[in-house]
Length: 498
Ligand SMILES: Cc1ncc(COP(=O)(O)O)c(C=O)c1O
Image (cartoon, rainbow, N blue to C red; front, side, top):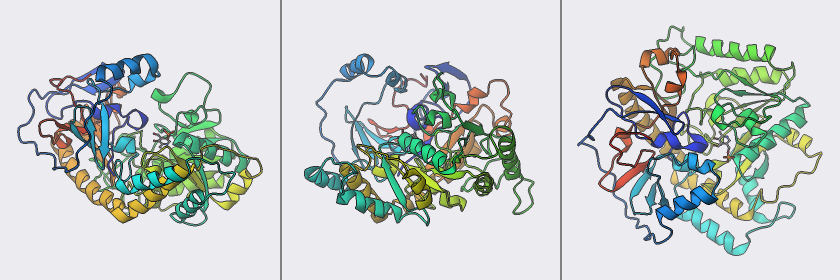
């Protein structure tokens, strides 16, 4: 499992791959709608370690030329896809094997972004691939109105990963679809309409989930968000409150902490903001609160340790149900637990998931309680592809493989090492404001200047610092000649960013 996020990661990967140096004077500039820090390093360091060896040999690429692919992309693909080709020289991926990717020229990359937090056990993992092949030869498609073994085996297996009373599984094709369904179920079950999410969150791009999402880049100027309200994200680095003990991470902020033992003032303040939202912005009865255990697209933002516990209590007092969006944090990625919510010592009423669920095969799920499921059962819900036999066979193999390969422990061990090493960069370089996260869900936030940023006072244009967050090139660019890391800019652009 490999994932390092940028504050603007998630569906649009881009910023993680841009060429940003860590040393020297900071100079910001804008291009392609993205803000990036211009490199101050003119020549690369000479003491970079080499990439570890790899025995796997990719097949020789003999298909469309790069130029032809870009031409097709420009002419026949949605114009939006050009926006997400962030790299000055786009990366043309051709083959994957475990943590490695190869481009059409045979250049090897370390996929630090795990296919946008989606590849949970490695690209084309042999065991998962075998499970897919076996099912492809047997039955590609039938729908969940028929009874077939793969769906039932999978639902039982997935449910066994959840504590009571989370035992009823709905299968979908994506995270947005899972969150759409969760919104509907919450509203039907509670009889209430209003849903609260965090500012900065990303919960999907469908017309309904666009309302949950609180991030201008992913919003279109159409009616969306009816009944959706965003509350302050308890961001202990960037927000107005935070100290050096707030989060569940091997790395804390560089902010001072004057709290008495076991008493987190930042948490109290952020809960105060939620209370303010509850008394001013929504009716007295609400349908749901949606929160990721670690805010992914928002920049791997971690909340004060007891925040979710207290928030869940307040939401339930108002008739709402609590929904954990585990699209990024699920399936052991955070290392310490299988689900991100377990790290907060809470049990949600509903959990939504996708991405890592099937190692990149399109799939999503909602897991909820029999009681909530019963409210939804009053109507007929049909989904042609939800629970597709091939998807279920793959997802089932993913659950087995995470266990057999010890992927959760690997996330913990490698992630903790990476975090502590990244923290040394944070201590050394002014431009790295914060390092945070758990397991292999890691954020590195680049800043204009550390002190004003960590105090949440970013001055005139907060966008400059908000959007500029990258994986340190000096850490992950462990390349031999002709090798690279996805997540860094592969272009030899002389330190110029796009
Ligand atoms: C936390 C979170 N929820 C939901 C989604 C939407 O998932 P999908 O892109 O599969 O619709 C994403 C996608 O990035 C996500 O990061």
